[in-house]
Each structure stands twice: as structure tokens, then as C-alpha cells.
Image (cartoon, rainbow, N blue to C red; front, top):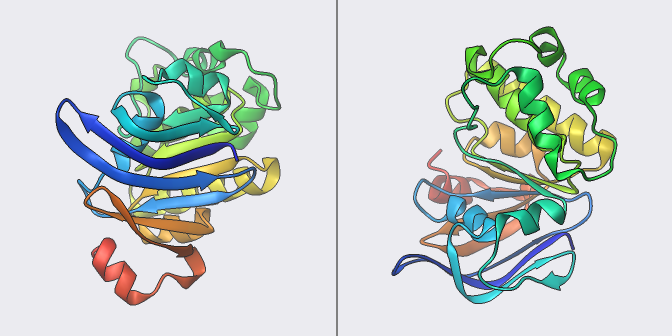
Length: 232
């Protein structure tokens, strides 16, 4: 397994957010973590990165238990790249500079400037443009491209559809499907948009109140689960 959370309890200060969360993503797997706002999805990502404090349970990268407290650089070195909620496109950096920043971890692999620009041609067209001058959809492509430049084994995306028009979400789903199919990159998708979940993921875990409450194949998501955990 690339990433395993085993009975993780995570906190912000004294606020207990995750209550015994267990999930795993293996080589080439495509997993969605779904649920309403505020149930602990982003905290799960933050627990992996050491931004939420893990007080019990274990986090493993490629089978190796990580020492507590966790540190973000350990995830990057282990081949886990994160596209955070809100994209975090930096002012004063061009598109090309953002992509080069993603390569700072210096992991070997197939993702180069040329490969990322083949995946997202608009990034080549606007390479000299400030990242903040791009549209929302283009910024999301830039954030994904920046993460790919780290040549990850696992790409974690936190609410990538947030603020995007439906047609852009469709394009994003197509890109993620290509990414997983062509390169075999494992995906952990933190999301509420059902169309994107169905396009990009194969397995799901549903969260409520900091716990995993349902799991299974995305193809088997039924109406009861959708209404209870996605509000659709």
C-alpha cells in the first residue's frame, strides 16, 4: 500500500476531529473520500501531512509507520503529492515557475514540463502568465500539474471541483481519468461532486462526524448513501 491510515485519531488543539479513521490506497487504486462539509475529510488529508495532530493510530507510507508528529516533507519524499483545497496559486509566480516549484522534491519519474504541458496544453500556452491571472479551471490544472511535477505515486486532491463551472468539472474528470489510466497514478479524491466521483474513482469511503461509516465500489453508490452523505 502507498498510504494507510489505521485507527487514526486526529486533533486540532484539543478538538477531537477524527475518530479511528482507517483507509488505504494501493498502487494504481482510485479512491474517493466523500461526505458533507465539516465531517473530517480535509482533516484526513491534514493528518497525512502532519497539519492535524495524530494522537492515536498509525499512518504508513509504503508500509512504513511514520513517526509522530508527522512532517509534510515525509509525504513528499514518499511519493505522496497533494492538491490542496483552494489551489494555493502563489502571486508573482508564472505558470512555468509554479511547475518548476513542484519539481523541487526531485523524485525521478515520467512527469516533466513537457509531459505536464501535453496533459494540459493551456499551461504551455500561458507559461509566462502569472498563475493568479488564470481562470479557476486553469488554476486547478496548474495546481494538478505542479503536484505531478513531484512524480508522485499517489495524488491526493482536496475538493478539486470547488468553484468550478460544470463544463470545467467534466474536463477535470476526463483529465483525472486519463492520468490514472495512462500513467497508473493512484488517486485519493476528497470530493462531494457526484459526477467527478463517478468519473475519477472506483472505490469510496463515506465520512460522517469524523468516522468512516460506509465503503464500497463507486458503481454501487445507491440513493440512500447519496442522500445521507452527499445531500443529493
